[in-house]
Each structure stands twice: as structure tokens, then as C-alpha cells.
Length: 196
Image 1 (cartoon, rainbow, N blue to C red):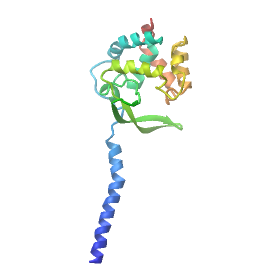
Image 2: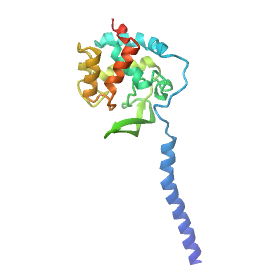
Image 3: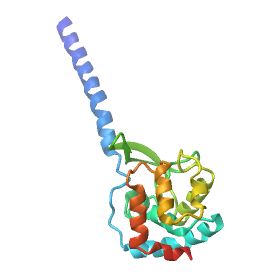
Image 4: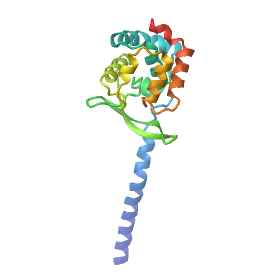
């Protein structure tokens, strides 16, 4: 009887141990990637045509050139194709603030010279317009990044190349090629035409 009791205890212990090891791995696997590319029905041009009116309206009110914000939206959302943008309408990969509806997703973060996968909570928006309005409000209130002064930079009279580099230098994004990517998007899509 004693040996059977020990065997039952051992099996229970083993089951708890296996569950304890594999359940976090399974749970982590079940979290989708924010940058999963979704099939969408719009082109890059249609993406810009869709966001341009709201970006131009709000950018004008905040004193920011639309081109840099449109490039940020395109870069952060892969032209609205990433899961975070297409399903949850979060164009700028904005982290959830207190009181926001949230979605937990995996995302890539550049740290110590390599891309690492992290888990984060992101804001869910009803529309891209809502995401645009919130982005500007959070930018002005310095809640977009831990680096202070991003809004002041964006309202400065710097050209888009200097502005993109200044945002990278202040660690607005962890991507070491952030400035080059923004400039490429602006130039390839003639986004400065929206600044007029």
C-alpha cells in the first residue's frame, strides 16, 4: 500500500510539473503577432488616400507636417496590413493607456543589437481616424514614447530628413534604421505633397 501511495503521489507531482512547464509555453504560443501580415483589399495608395484627410486635419491643428505622420503610420502598420492595424485599427502600435480597450500581442523590439520578441498590450481603436486623433493627443502629452520632446521636434521647421533622423536619435523607435525607413516611405510615395 505504501509503494502505491508513493507512486500516485509521484504521478500527481509529475503531472503538475509537466503542466507547469508546458502551459506557459502553450499560452505564449497562442498570443498572435502584432506584425502578422493580413490579406487586405486596399493598395498602398488607397491606404494613404484613406488616412490623408484625418492626418491632414489633425496635423494642421497640432502644427505638424502630415508627411512624417503618414510615413510613421505606414511603417508601423505596414500600410495597414499588420494585424494590429487591420483588425484593431491601431496604426501606430500605440501601447494601451489606462482605460483603453486592450489586446495582448507579441511584437518585435530591437535591443542589444538584435531583434527580440516581447509581449505587450496595445490600444484597440474603433477606426483608423480614432487612432490618428489619439496618436496626436498622446504625442502632445508626451505619452507616445519615453523620450521627451518628440512633439516639439515634430512641430519644428526641420525638413523631413532631419526630422526623421532627430526622432531616431531621441529613440522614438528602437529600430536602428527608423529614419532611413521613414525617408524612403516619404520619398517613394511623394508624401510631402500632403504638407501643402
